[in-house]
Length: 184
Image (tube, rainbow, N blue to C red; front, side, top):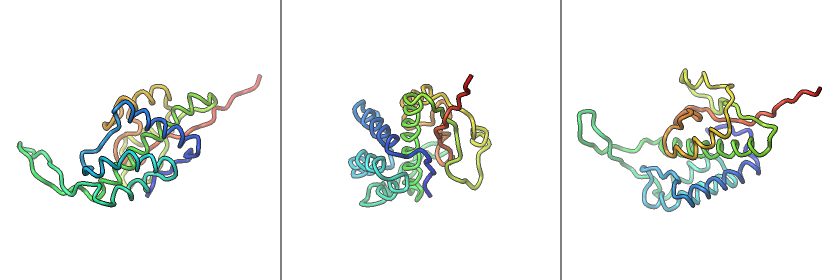
């Protein structure tokens, strides 16, 4: 089930594509170690296609095809050493949701900065069975677009320092809220 992206329109999609181009140009696009060689080669174009006309669900579906994901991965054992384990069946969903959502949030940061009459708030974009208390505490809180954009551009492939979005499968995202102004 895709996250709900209430502000996923043409303007947001354009900003997402610009952010993707920036990451590619600067050599900082997150590439999951779970992607196969084919997946690594195809990923930037698949992500761009989802940004143009899809969402995290369409990206996950594309990643599942043509051997784009490794079947196994190395995992560290608790007492030292490594073992080979199957890649979780939810890996494509987790990757697609997390990265699409990060670019969506980056795009909304830019819109809030450029449009001037909008701010960002954290919202529940997907119902989860057992919500994390720290995620629930974030819902409805305001987010500084400039700080969040810098955070998301800097902390590639890891949980952002500001905790928005708060890690894989949180079901949280941000949305634009029109700033109400009062007349004198």
